[in-house]
Length: 567
Image (cartoon, rainbow, N blue to C red):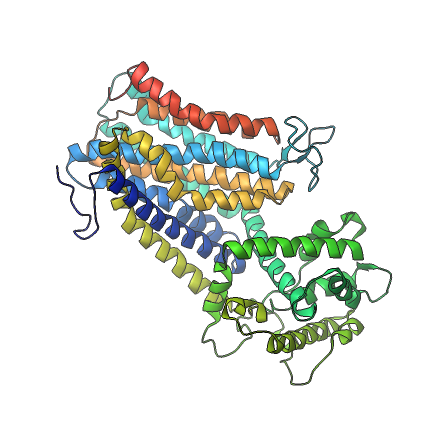
């Protein structure tokens, strides 16, 4: 049989090598689309309140990659062809859920582990016991249990078509229709819960804000360090500019001036109390003292600078996005009053030069803080004019100015839409490539899609969780695990609902006993663990990681050993 070109123009292949190449190409396209969706969501979280948008739109668009692959597997061709290829969609759904619940959570525990105290709770930011499987681990907040419960309930939806199948009923018109309706009911219930109780959405929004403020702080340190050079003495000099009392500690108005002054480029954001708490938690050895010492400041800034360099090597995409949305704006101050309350308090930059030393004399009141920001701005301009004009370092000539809320929302929405279009277009040829590889290699379709499809559709989600977890704080590991539970819940409701709709309206047979059994076992096992525990020692990560290959092995045993395959 000669393969047919998707859309009449995209290439296809019947060989193993050609299929692998196409899998890499289409997988990369879907990965890029997922990245655009993630970046668009992050942009929206910087400027919108959690609630209707954060609770409704963002969870749904996050589940679109898997949903598109599921839909593409069963919409094309004749019913007999759809019956053959629909297993790819279920494999993608199963693989995504199992990968998220085992590999992603397991690795998140490993990279986010801290020492456990005598009560078994993780001590934030402290890791002195290395790889001790019992005395290191992570602790999450109690609110994570609600997400785990939703995930368990959503997994039970698989029983609607599967229970009759266990008793031999393979053609299930009304049953699959009922299952589809229940899936979308659970989907609506989940997004309503996210909307009316958006505690985790607020955390995501605050995490996105602090990520941006950290970026500005690092770049401000480069500018104030003199010629972009950063060493201990430069950091100490910056600290002393804000140490009004000269006692070697920053507290009260000094601390607020530090937070505001070090993030002067983010003129669209007003310093909040929790911003000071963020600096205290990251810098102070004793956050309860509400003060940062000079040594704490130097050590903390060096850690941030090191992290910034690592991130800069991986990608400059967020800075590019911010520059794009401010391009051709005609002015550099945000125009949205929701972003800049009292914008008239920020004077425009004047031509006169103001030295760094002048920053230290005005830190108590709002006007004094503004002068500190103005001084930093002029220093940044002077440093920028004396530095090289290398285009690769263009972003270091001064931090980008926060664009207006309207521009951020517009660009964020555009990225999400573009990501959806790209994934929608690439899903069908990806499914065909998976089918071709399965035929050419002799590996069953389910196992091919189980392993390969999630690498494209969920890689961005996995990397995001790892980066959040590596901060080694309870709030961050809670956010990482909640992100996983939310993704699985959406797969079990929206993606499964689409799958059941395809089975119902195309009148396909339900022949997925072993696959569904494995999905249920993993979802229920990990979900119950999330409901019953708030602390996870390192050995739990090892168990979770081992479940992934065991899930593949169990499916093969049920299919070929127990004879469940294609009953």
